[in-house]
Each structure stands twice: as C-alpha cells, then as structure tokens.
Image (cartoon, rainbow, N blue to C red; front, side, top):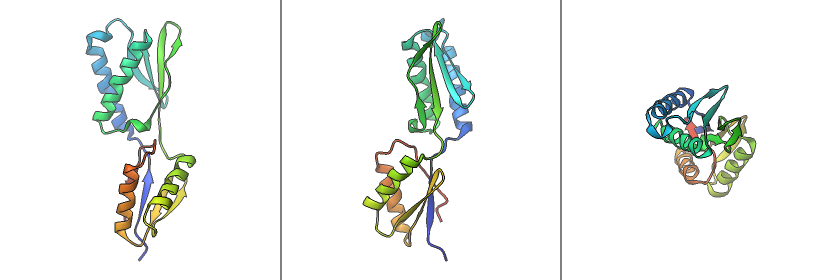
Length: 162
C-alpha cells in the first residue's frame, strides 16, 4: 500500500464569497451611515469592486465586507485588497480573491516542512498545490498542526488525507 498523503491547497469557495457579498450589500443598503454616500459593493469580473463618495466611507464598506467574509468562514488571508483610489467623484477599492498557492509561497511552505517538520515527511510542489507524504499518519498530522501555527500569508486547506 502507498504511503499516507495529503494535499495543501488554497481555494476560496465562490458560493460562500457570493453569499458574503450579498449579506454586505444588504447591510450597506440598510445602515444609516451609508445613506447618500453612493456606497456599493459588487463583482467586477473576478474581482470585487467597492465604491463610495469618500475614502473613509469606502474603507468602512471594506470593513463591513471583511466582517461578512469572516462570518461565512472565509479567511481574510485569501483577500488581496488594494489601496483606495479616486475615480472621478468617488473612491474605489478593488479586491482580488487569492486562489492557488504561488510558487514563492509553495517554496516557503516546503522549507518550513523540511526545517521544522518531522524528518520522515516529504513535500512536492504540484502546480498550485503541495503534496505531502510520510510513512506515518501521526507525522502528517503533526505537519498540519505546524503549518496551522506558521506565519504564512496564504489561507491553507488540507484535503485528500489518505
């Protein structure tokens, strides 16, 4: 039988993100401090676009959206929010959702596993995910615990634990 393995991925559930967006839209429509400031949030292709009449208001819209993402169980590490910028009479913020692990982040994770993880654990970079193998299931679980506590600016999920 093959050695036990698991995969490390970084994916955002599109439906959960959409649900968080709709909840934020409802709250923005109902809150008094967002009346008459042109505050809105919506999809713009694969990105989220936040708009408001002032920089402070667009940052407040961002806070509302982040709170809804947290409530839906989506880590803020998977959001890549830009800086507020002026566009005509309104301010905007573009937010990209991070899907997949970049090669630099994959190398950092592999280095953490190699340096601090159990010696029997091996990792391979496979596209935008990592495959981790070991002879011992306990070592794999120790590696998961190590990575959960590590300071990595990517939201990690562990899948296909066999």
